[in-house]
Each structure stands twice: as structure tokens, then as C-alpha cells.
Length: 49
Image (cartoon, helix red, strand yellow):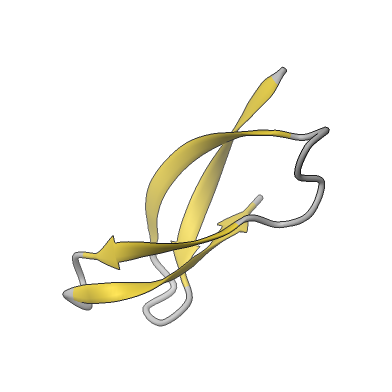
């Protein structure tokens, strides 16, 4: 079963994106490079609770 997670920008600390992930396949925290509209550049976004 997939779970909805929130992604937070590592530079501006704002929660910009939501996505889903499979808990069995990726038990750790997810990291993706996404565009931050507040910083106006691509930054690393990490999974938050």
C-alpha cells in the first residue's frame, strides 16, 4: 500500500511537494531534486513526517 508523503526543501525549509511511496521498497527517507519556486532553482527535497 502506498503512503502519501511531504517533501521539504533543504535550503528554504518550506514544504513544497507531496508524493507517494511504497514503504516496503523504500523504508528510509526519500530525497529528490525538485524545483523550489521560492529559491527559483533546483534543490534537494527530503521527506518529512
